[in-house]
Amino acid sequence: MRSLQILAGIAGLASMLSPIQASTVIDPSTAAKAAIDAMNNAFYNPSEGRWSPDVAWWISGTALQAVLDYMHVTGSRDYLSQAHEIIEKQKAPLPWWPQGGGNFRADSTDDTGWWALAMLRMFDLTGDKRYLTIAMQDEQYIWNYWTDTECGGGIYVDIKAMTYKNAIANALYIKLAAALHLRTGDARYLTRALKAHQWFVESGMINAEELVNDGLTQDKANGVCFNNEGPTWSYLQGVVIGGLVELFRTTLNETYIRSAATLANAVISSPQLTPPSTGVLTDYACEGTAAGCNYDQQSFKGIFARNLGELDVLIVGRPYRTYLEQNANSAYQKARNADDTYGTSWSGPFDGSSLAKQQSAASLWVALL
Ligand SMILES: *[C@@H]1O[C@H](CO)[C@@H](O)[C@H](O)[C@H]1NC(C)=O
Image 1: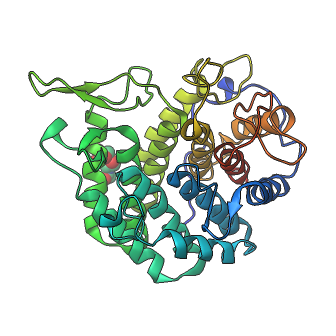
Image 2 (image 1 turned 90 degrees about the vertical axis):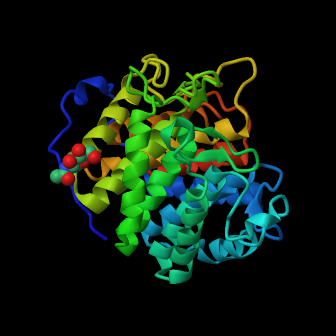
């Protein structure tokens, strides 16, 4: 696969990063492996072939991505038999959505998207085209829920209700379709990825601060769709960045890298997402609130880190590495338990562990490899 570094520095970025540690307090590969091992020890259920079967299925999909990314970047194959076990079990028709027919075709387009992206990494790792074929099947499944009518385009996230054109479903789709084009050269995927990207940019989901809100609301009286001003969850920013990275990798058009950097810079300079007091990524809509973060929300920050890392390696000088290191150091020193499990807020304190929190911290460390 091509590995390209472009753009000697993104103007203005350096001054936004706090002048802190130039490296991490522990070797990132040691910390990443410890986080994955702790995730397996605490949460993996071999007979179910997933972690924490009581926790939403998509979170095992993004946890698998973290483990596959770790193997991909380090060359380790320590978790390959576990990955096979997970995939064999989870690709069966879902008990709660058997009509999807299996191969990760779920009752929501975003749930399918997480697993499809993991299948692409499994293909990268093994060269086994069966995983590529599954990802292609999933792409087609998700694309079936695109309509040109409501909101002028976009994919519905909720398949059962055929409702809600939101950021996560469409961002995941763009990343998947662009990544499929990169791996297959099939022009159909690029056409669809570009169509979805163009629609996304024009949809109104990107706000005046250059951040992505949760989704669109339709005015039933006139049919016009508008930004619903839902939270600018960290993972939304992350997956949009990841989609732009894949679009760049497959087209070599630097416009996509510049757009991704604009979004990354907006996250780092947002006082809500990166409070200056900590310099640490924060899902402000749940962290520190009375309700706290649910499992979905606990999963988000690591997904941002993963995608920011995918952008970082493409830019000369690695302009985002310091930010990732700053987050990883804080999580390690302030949000970690003695058993290498991590809490919700990377600025601490440790508030107990869960699969969602753990895959998020593992993804953060993997982003530094
Ligand atoms: C690069 O992408 C942008 C945004 O999609 C587009 O406007 C521009 O024409 C592209 N440039 C080339 C050389 O294809």
